[in-house]
Length: 201
Image 1 (cartoon, rainbow, N blue to C red):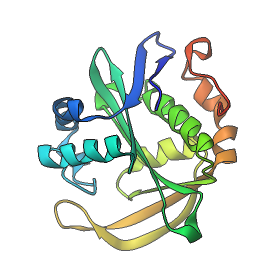
Image 2 (image 1 turned 90 degrees about the vertical axis):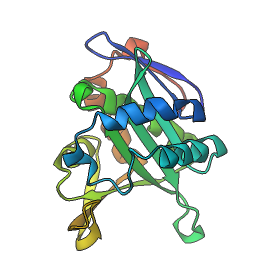
Image 3 (image 1 turned 30 degrees about the horizontal axis):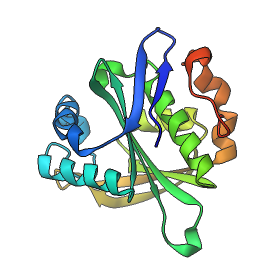
């Protein structure tokens, strides 16, 4: 995937590009900075370097699209788009977003969303699904602002990394829903310096 540069409204420049094996140490530093109280709701231990290497290998092989946002050579956001390979679900992809707490509320999440929208558009994805645990209220706010709608809640469906049962929240957005959120996303980006193209929202 192409490397892209975005200028946020605070005039900070971030670069978004594919995750690769050279990023394992940077990824480890990024996830270590996220409070354990938030990490416990992730589906895997992102402080384990072996796991981080596997994530990077998935990205390099193209199995999962993984993009990172960098500011001053440090990762400030991590996102993935996993395309469903089941034929009866073709046209669907699963989205995950993680933002550095120090850059929360500065538009990084919306630059990543814009970037992944372009990718989904080019790959003819019709629907994007986000799944997360109910305590992750910050994600619900982000996805709602991006145009996602509540699809359902599965009570006590998953276990967090501490072994406690948690409800799983499922939110869904069509590409048109994401396109409709363009004006909101645009409030966070300097549109004169953001990526443009056929898939622009």
